[in-house]
Image (cartoon, rainbow, N blue to C red; front, side, top):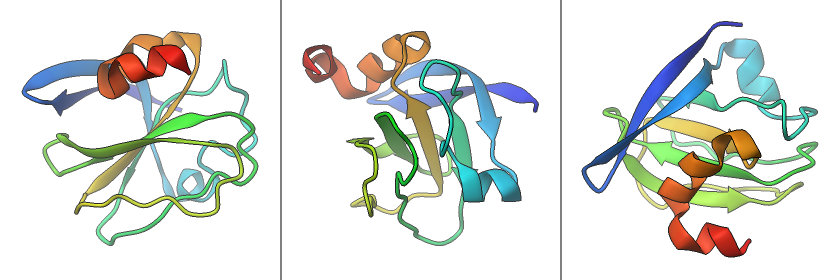
Length: 119
């Protein structure tokens, strides 16, 4: 699977998320399900319709980031395992799922801030 480096923006600051997978049709169904925390890579889902996400069969927490069409963050939330429904409060064009692992600690801390250090 090919990966790319994805630039996202928060409050006029940017961060690059390395090794992001752009979800194909199969990956849109599977997402992070059945993956392991330390081996999982961020996944980008492009959507034209508002949709919710779930974390059935994802055995670890991950950060859901809702982006507009220019990759500006419009909402984010740490999703617990086996959550039934998570949805953004604002309009969005893409969803980025970032595993909470050592590899992406700096990215998650950039988005969530100091609050993440206490989790």
